[in-house]
Image 1: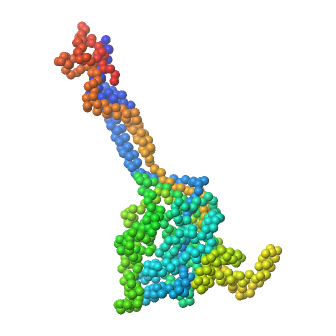
Image 2: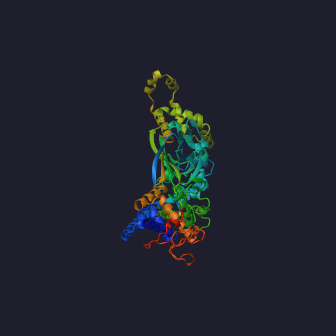
Length: 609
């Protein structure tokens, strides 16, 4: 009976404790799965309670520090870049932009001269020779010519119909209609293949030169008119040579011939093998890539370089009040070029009587542009205010270029016959006849045609006597004629093959280095290591919070009371009585001879909740 009485008394005490906040905490702490909490609550030895309390505090502190490090690591939003080779998928063919390295077409100047339309050009050349400038090198450049004679500069630019001899893409013929035109301050007219609407972009399913773009181009390196010579500018490192400048770029992006182009010389067949590379970047919060487009003369796909070029132009406009012809134009600003000399014709003819030959012409806006360009090129601090970000998806192309001697003299006559019948009758000779002059290709064709004697043509059809053709001697004049024709062709013609050499696309994809799943896994490992806490342990804490909130709002007063009341009993009755559910009070328990209460406290224990 004594054991039962003790057990009943202890159990009743624990149930009575549940009506207070400390009691609820103690109850759930004794049942918690967290290491150490149950030890603190259930231990009877005070020293043991203190030791376990210290251990729990140490574990909680270590877990908190480690969790803060994990959260800080997650909030850094670091990324890793993985490479993946994608096969069995069509590859988008890039845009190909070509510019004649020599911006001015001598044939166009000839036509303007015949039509008596060159007086502005002549006046400008005399003007820059008769007067002095602080930026002497710039005033003798192609850019100054364009900035001061914009319309005339466009008129003397190359025309694609004059340059393009033959075009073939993916075993099908193409023409000038497949090209779009844009103007560059250094190269004037440039032409882009596959530069139209993004919905019409070309897809490639095969590799090799036969399935790519093949162009035969004339660089129009014609002889200048007698007595006319150009001015060589030693400060210009990109002009004064023959060939075409080629830019291979993603469809819809802004080409930059000066910065991203490569030269193709005449007299060679150039093969450019491409390999596509796809960059996929993450947006915020892991990165700052963007899907926005760029607005210049037209709308372009965003690239970081093009965005910075447009930003430079805006800064120069804001600081100098003028724009630069070396940068893309921003149509929202209606300003003139920095190198424009207002009323230069009035100064040249000295209509006001204030100007004399040899005087220094001030160009403050041009000086401002050069100063700002130098500052922007040497200090990249301006980039932080440009708002330029890498595109979330960007395609670039690795290039491998090879050259071979072209065309062989053995095939030049046959090639000219084909070009003469297909192209020249339609464009070249027809236009030249209007100007009263013959095309250099026509002269080369006539030289080679004279060398092809009728008996040689007849023998060439019989392979058994080819040796007679090879051993036939030519006179000195015939050799010179052959060399002249070959030089005319090789100094003006080039073949360009641009194709995919591999259909496998290498994708560099950014991934979160430390994601949300990794954070949760590390949090669980940290709490389990230091505290032994799991998700179910957290649910116990939730239960504790709910019960404490319920206690704060007296929600437990509706529950059955505990068996033992340590406070004053109802209606002033003493201890040892139980409050029943109907409001009656249990009679006092009787005592045995030893004075021990014989009342069974288990009768008053609350029913389990």
